[in-house]
Structures are given as C-alpha cells and as structure tokens.
Length: 63
Image 1 (cartoon, rainbow, N blue to C red):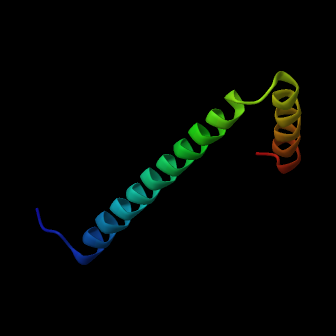
Image 2: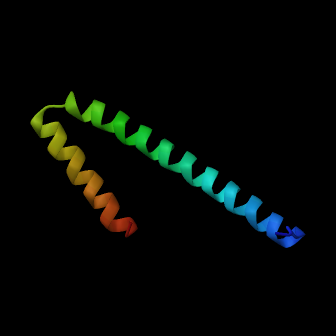
C-alpha cells in the first residue's frame, strides 16, 4: 500500500480530531463530577434552586 501526502494529511487530521474529542470528553466529565460533588452538599431547597436555574439555562440556550 502506498501512502500519499493526501492520505497522510487525512490520517493526521483524524488523529488530531480524535485527541481533541477525548480531551473534551475528559474535561466535560471532570466538570460534571465537580458539580455533583458540590450539589451533594446542598440542602434540598438549594438543590431545587440550582436545578431550576440550570434547567432554565439549558432551555434558553437550546442545548
């Protein structure tokens, strides 16, 4: 099999995209874990207030 410059560029781009995706997943997971740790320490009313605000944010941003 002969590797052309185009093939090599494509392979490099795919690897960079994969690495960037993995970093995004790790960062998102860490953020979620930190938020969960903080929510656990809240009272029921504080959790309700947080969740209301968070759901409102998600709804407004259409995410």
